[in-house]
Image (cartoon, rainbow, N blue to C red; front, side):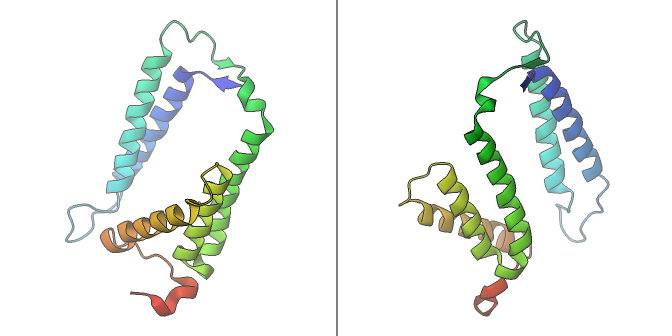
Length: 156
């Protein structure tokens, strides 16, 4: 079953608007030009714009029914991959405090890269590079504390 672009667009537009509206309620951070609501406001605005574009695309004459059958969604492999993404997110949430960001993110990304067909020789390099890049972005630039876990002795 496939939901039409019009319906999806309206849902995305409403959700993005709600996220942006809630982000406005966050208190400003003292001494900083961008507060804690900056990133959620940006995401909400992007979702709202994407929703509006989907509504516009869905209003074209070819979109007659709100729901349509899509044969590809009945493939078990796709359902398994979807479940794997949810499982990987649960794994991350449950393990990151104990094992730390570096180990958990590396395993998280490596597992997803493997499941989605990235060549084996590239997986360690990609997982390590993306993990390090995310750590630099969040820990150093955005000053988001990430858990070190088992690597606490190596924390900088």
